[in-house]
Image 1 (spheres, rainbow, N blue to C red):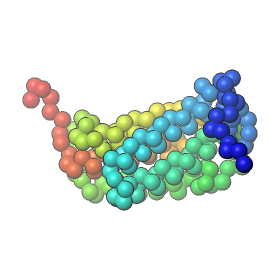
Image 2 (cartoon, rainbow, N blue to C red):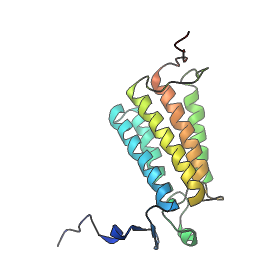
Image 3 (spheres, rainbow, N blue to C red):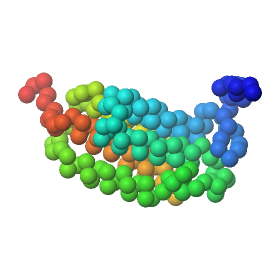
Image 4 (tube, one colour):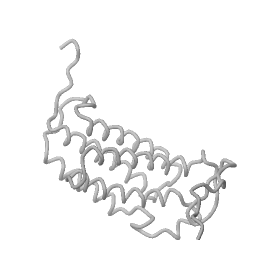
Length: 183
């Protein structure tokens, strides 16, 4: 049996296929949104590689990354096909958003919150998490057009960016105040 090739050439015309059918331009709202989510997921993969397999952070990120597959499935579906989505498998649910809120609350107990603006880069893991946070914010902005309410895509991405900020501060090990050069 011949092995299927990774390339299809179907997108050479500047379009991409979507879940449950249909094609859109690669620069349209849906690919822009799920592409930003995919980028955030890739950055979280870098965090996992840096943290090491089997760590508490690795386990936490794997669960988030699986949620991101669900989110990307929803964002890769035309509005007229969204009735085919399955809660928690290809559509983000309010419970998934609540789960992120509970994670934030749980992690908040592991460190003292900073009292001033944070300068990213206290260590490599926290810096990568801050990059992931900014990509999640971009994905949230793109998702406004791709998955308007009542979709939970935007609330999920909003909480995800908050969670990534929280994880970054936890991973720093301490909250260092920002001091200006003049101080």
